[in-house]
Length: 596
Image 1 (cartoon, one colour):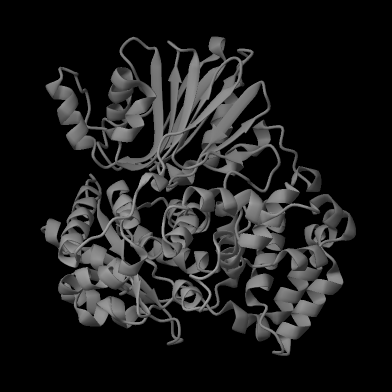
Image 2 (cartoon, one colour):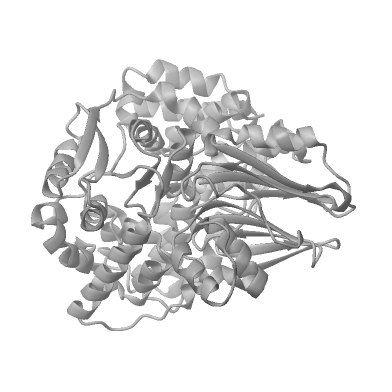
């Protein structure tokens, strides 16, 4: 796990060396162990890395450079099948000088070019300077586990793993004039800003499963992997269960490759319990597991985590955390770089801090809900009588509306008149959702909904959580469910295998029950969050009102009387505006912490 950064100047103008060092300094938390920069000022190019040393501690220094000095590579992430790929390369006569997975990327690229990305099983953001082509490549993993941002003004492209490393060296202006109003509009729809938009105009997120090639004359973008290439098929349960458990077991096994201590986040839910159960098969020592609990039983899963830990003989560390974590929100937003209205980032940071005292790598259960329909929203939506009867366009809009935070009319009513006029005609559905729905049209209705959430919710919010909160304390989070083989199996599986008579993760739980036990497999799902809405009606209401009413950014974007009406109706209980107020206060805190 690392942070990467660099630039490509089409006019061959070099950035000053102190600029590169400043970019590196902004990413130290992502890579506290080492730093490396490959710079060719005469060509106007540099790529750099801040390293969190996980694999080949002594030999994994980046950048990796070809023997002839023509190709240089840096990466953020891990290539989990690097052992098999290195063995294959050696059998072909390639000399491997280290055991680093980044050297494997370099040697594969030398032989196969950018097409080598398809051979990588991992989570990664990669930069490759190729002097032979006089070009620079940026590439992102299949589903966007690892972040990668770029600002390209037509002459110079600057990139980094986090936005904070880019802002001083781009044309994106800070202040309200630099805020992307369309991104704000999407934020109010989704509760996060979906890629490729960012909060800043002119600064974009590289799309998952995509590479970009920067040349002297422009930039070429190509999608190198698409989950929509799968075709649903019929399975017998026993065949499916064998394939499912086989893939997940191997995905877990190869994610245990590390030269540092590792463990797992364990909530006692079906996803984390299954991963820990599979880990226990492959390690000689007890698996180190980490959990935080709360005094409020509505939000406390620690008893289930303890049950799972006991079942698998884990070395379990659990702490009861202070429930009200609002004072941590600005720190969270600093590491996110953008507003996110999801309150669960705060407890995720807390459990990451706990784990970081003991390990440098954790495995997590992220992705299981989006792949196999684990959220209550899927059951409630598809229980509607019209969910299957609607025509395709009506279904898409109905599901989109069901997951939207603010509906279009509510956004227009919230905006100041001048902002509303600028955003008139902008539709988050058309811009951010419909293209994904169109790709997934051959799937059944449930898989279409899951596909949309894989592309938007998962990459835009739920994977940001373990990456940024883990990296904030310099630990790496690995996600076995997002092995490409598991993702493709999930979308070969019909929706009826995922929800059946109200049973979410239907076949998944049947397949995992022999490993984790009936109690853990079929316990009611409990969201990993905190009761922000209750705090907003009680002890934290004065703070909430002051934060919203004193925000210069909110005052310039939104009508204060609309916000005040929401505050009053939430306080007196006539309405529940928890999610809307949460999103607005995250935007206000972002502006206070790192924004305009």
